[in-house]
Image (cartoon, rainbow, N blue to C red; front, side):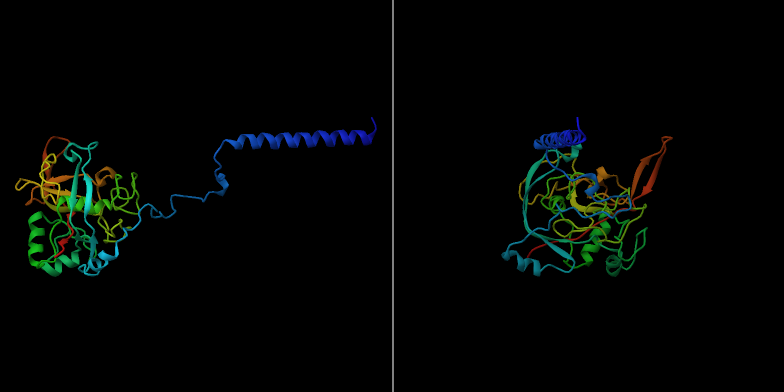
Length: 300
């Protein structure tokens, strides 16, 4: 075989091998979804700032509702009424049964009542974690009622149904942003450094409400019952009497599970302490330094 013939043979074999390799690659990709390679994906580290979820899209209001929005009291958001499924059949017993509830239009405070606002009305600050724009805490239900009375009809506590409806922002997930906890929406046990924080420093929900999950627990107006007794579908107010009041929303020292929209706890309206059993079986009182509230208001 001459050198020329040898060169042609090697060149032919190389071309055939290259075509065969390309054919195999095309066949492998034919039935697969094409994804970007790892080198094309952005780098993410623990230091990278969290980005708000694109699923939390602000509620869009009709032209007819714009007048109600313009008439909202300072610091309040308009909540367009509607129907939703309240409760959760797959969580704690007191969140059952799931049931349909409808609420009328109302206004809801964008923020938890701050220490500055409380002190301006009440003349003192009961909070453990001092900060002008931090939520007021260490207030019991009766304290909140005194504030409401002095506020002269610009504040009331939301019903439990109103609170859950507003907190959902029309979402059907565990939290208003999805089913996994997101630190860009809440102050809780994992990121709070064991203290409250200035209201509005996390991203809002679909209605423009801040800190609906975490920072401080929030009193609502309903008496607590260990299961939902469905008395009425429209604007339910809970039992007419009881021993405990409902508290919602989780706080800065809550676990991710306690932040769930449907989660409920209860506390006596006079109490600021909670009896806890120690390791040795002794009972001690822990100061409730993480319960506050936010205002609601009915439309006239």
